[in-house]
Length: 295
Ligand SMILES: [Fe+2]
Image (cartoon, rainbow, N blue to C red):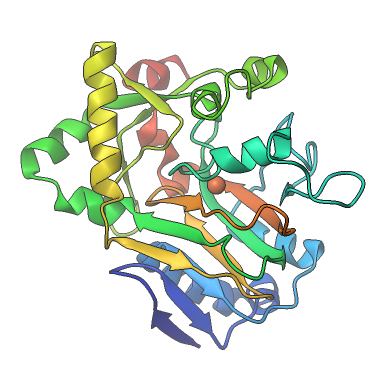
């Protein structure tokens, strides 16, 4: 097995190991898990992916999420990211699927708006456009380490509110449906996620974050905006250009990502599996003290 660094201080390609190896072999899983904790984004090329294999690989890392109401794939372990409508043709730009895809182009981490946040997302390319449609990643761990000590300490004691309706509202009012709002009440998380394996902290933010606990609305919004800008500063990202057979997994505790646009008439189909964070992944330390006491 070979690990080839790809990005500015994070992200790596895994060579000589397949999804099937990780799914079936303890040593292959252990080596991949170690690389995941270290590099935050792992790329596997030339994989022969089926839904079953992707799920078997994903399950190694923890319990798979069940896809939420309102998303394609709801009730299953798969999120279907596509702008291909039920009749097999590409949907128009004002279609709900296109608007959701636009929301995906805001910097975010997956599932910070859920009751249980995500450890990792695994994305496989099934149909890719001839150009565009990349996924861009930044390391919020490296961003955290760029902050001065005073701000780092302050963020470790601060908590931010995350709401799915907030990120969707930035694209179109009402893009989050009443059912989605009801199923996904706002969640409050510590603004730094410390990795229990290596002890390194990462800024935990996303387009879903809208307020900082204990700060007035304007000041909280400003702090979130400043941190988002700092975390996504030019020159700090890894842009993944998808090839057929690619599978990418990322650490939602230590990265943010965004989809990039592609020509609207071209089809693109990606399948995501998402693994919930467990106690061993540090989720307990992310909850505000009041809710820890209540549990
Ligand atoms: Fe995402």
